[in-house]
Amino acid sequence: MLRTLHLALNLNDPFEACIWAMALCAFWGMMCFSEVSVTSCSAFTTSKHLTRKDAHFSNDLDRKPYACLDLPSSKTAKLGEIQSVFLVPQEGLCLLEALQNLARVVPAGPDDLLFSWRDQHGIICPMVKAKAITHINSILSAHSWGTAFGHSFQIGGASFYLSQKVDPEIVHIAGCWWSLAYEAYIRAFEQVASCHLGGLLSQLVL
Image (cartoon, rainbow, N blue to C red; front, side, top):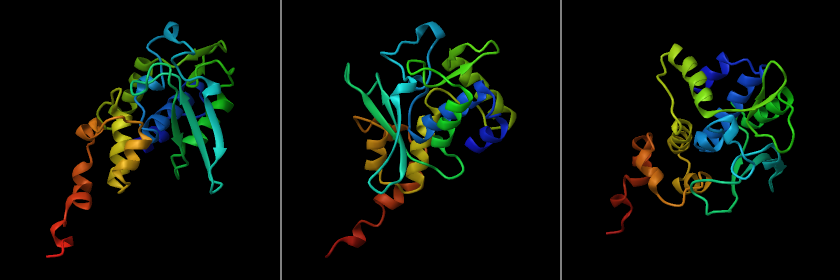
């Protein structure tokens, strides 16, 4: 799905560069689309939505690059609590490159929405969720992928990590879930169930 989007989008176009960056962050960061977009341009507020100053780039203890998005507001965070999402490079579908490309194609101020684009008049426009989903679905439907919804990328990211045998606890922490509710809608659990649940009796010492 992500590769289909990548091939279809023009990353030098402000609107599509924004779509690409938010799609990758939602997938790899296991974020719902309401965390990377707004319901309307007038609904944007720095106290609830990600701004350019909320995105940070650094290196970890192994000197590997990562990005950190500090969410001012989230469904799984307490009122007034900042929740951080950590993002690392991914070969071929790198969200760090997508964020850097967005900054290049759509220069904006520190208090502008992180995922914003410039219209033909050069005006900064916050990315509206419905508009982004509609554009993504127009591409996916044309390639027989069906349609996406607000939690599709979050679910897809979690499912992918589990299918690649990432420890469920790591997925739990990285996805900033406070409960185990995410397990109820992870689509690829059947692909990894045997890895975590199978062969337990053979490990017992009789």
